[in-house]
Each structure stands twice: as structure tokens, then as C-alpha cells.
Length: 146
Image (tube, rainbow, N blue to C red):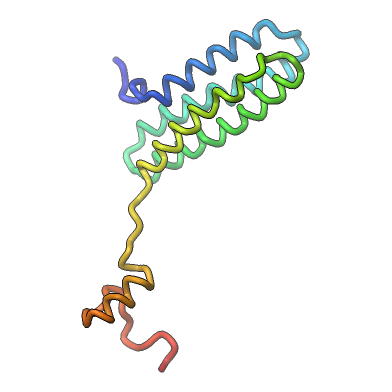
């Protein structure tokens, strides 16, 4: 049974990257595996896991929240990858590969973002009043008692 989240390119890319990083960490010296590697693997696998969990949520607000958590894990992974690059543990340029995942993830978050309610903006209320219409969000008296 393949779930819908497995079809998402952002999920596929994040899992591929997590797998590659996990394989690389297995070759590190023991101290680096324990000190850096475990945190890197945890944050890397968390990105895909949170994308998967988001797809199982009924409410859009919950889905967005898990995608934001995935984005936070992606940023944490960026930190550990950059640190690993500086220590010579990870090939330089690996952090650049995170940009594609970030771009795809941000696009998915924006796709689920609620449309702004333009009727609540002052520009809408002013334009409605100028056109002789009653603004949708009017009060019984003027805002400053005047």
C-alpha cells in the first residue's frame, strides 16, 4: 500500500538525501558518529517523517503545522551538514542539495496556506464605503466615537 505522501517529490528527495547521509555517517569515526551523526540522521529522517505525518492529518492547519516542523528539521539538518562539511566528514556542496528540498517544501506549505480575508482589510472597508456599499465588517458606531 503506497500512501499519497510517497508520490510527493519533496518527500522522495528528502528520503533520498537522508539515506545518503545515513550511509555516509556509517563510515565516520566512532566519536563523530555518536556526537554529530546521530543528530544529523535524526533531523534528516524527521523531514520525511513529518511530511508523511502531515499527509495523514484531516485539517489543513494540522497539515501546515507538520510541514513547518519538517522545515525546522530541514534547517537543523542544514546545520549538521554544514558542520560535517567543515570537519571534512561530508563532501562539500552537500548543504547546497538541501535547497531543492527547501524550495519544494516551502511551495507545499504555501499551497496549503489559507487565502487572506480581504474583507477584513482597511482598504476593502474604505473602498466599499466610497462605492456607497456597506462594508462587511462595519460596527454600529465609528471607531473613534466621532
